[in-house]
Image (cartoon, rainbow, N blue to C red; front, side, top):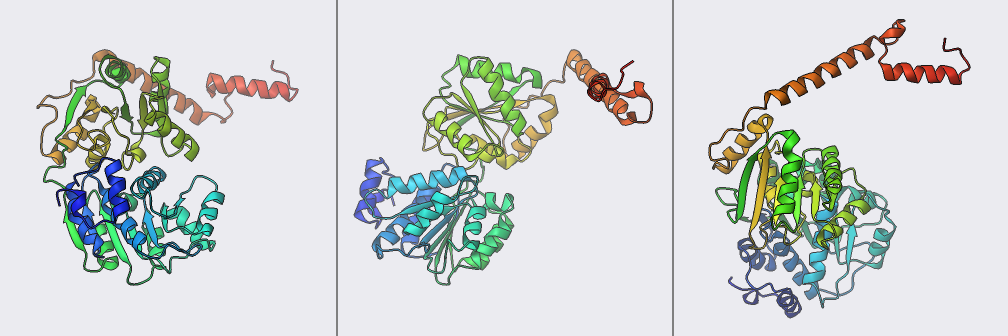
Length: 430
């Protein structure tokens, strides 16, 4: 299939695709959509950013639009499961775009917010429910969702759901599904756990694997900068301020690191926001909206955002910390270079991260550093770290002996705090 017009999609869907300027299907779309339209189960494997959402959304919309318009309350006809709230929101937006002109109602179900509006959408009757597994299971247990009439089940980013520990929730959800439904599974990788799951849930599936031999995204210019930890912020500010970096995603290893980097960028006059699992859903969505609307230039994130966030025109991805899992590197840099565009991925590598860099290069099957080895830390930096280590050890030792009757064993801060407590208690400090 060279164009969407060659597919047997209903006219309103084709018109919506034309308005959205979708003309040529990607490989995963060209191979899966015609088979899904015929009712076959699908097991699709493709890299992030290759158009998997349209590959399952278009057949689902087509099938439901051809069926009865009426839907019963709390009994959806299609269920799409996603691992994160952000991905669920992105999928629902795509359904709105592709289904413009169709009289189909959607319900968006995820945790971290009040369930009131979600329950109201389900009670009105929703043809399609887009959900994260945890909140969906909660609403099922409360009697707000009945899957006995389900016609289509879609699992997006299956590997990510299994990595996040959703398998027990998924199995409880699957136990409530009717026989004879159509099932569409999509994933970026294909570990053995997914094959086992597919074997028990899919019926004679068509297996499509678009993942290339090398997982490297060729249209992304991948660069490595060898820089010690203390110099990373300065390098990041230089990248953002000196070049055409109109929209930058920065990835850190920890939530605390994401907050710290965003705050330091703000202090340097760069508009930035952080997003990670400890942020409330409102705060996460507010940060995403600000980034999408160019109100902030830099979005600092942990790996929770490396999958499923589809924001166009991300010019740069910066790995502030190298990930310990090489696959996360591919998902991170996949936030740029989407929909055929080009992008730049810059990875900071300190001497302590050389092992992670080598693991990524082995996974990609190519060298990113040109054989260059990260320089050892300077003597000054090593001495500074040594002093911090000794100070920390001394503090821990003092704290360990505190309370053994020797008043001089307490660290100074604790001594001051105890004096203050004694004053409040009316004791003499002499």
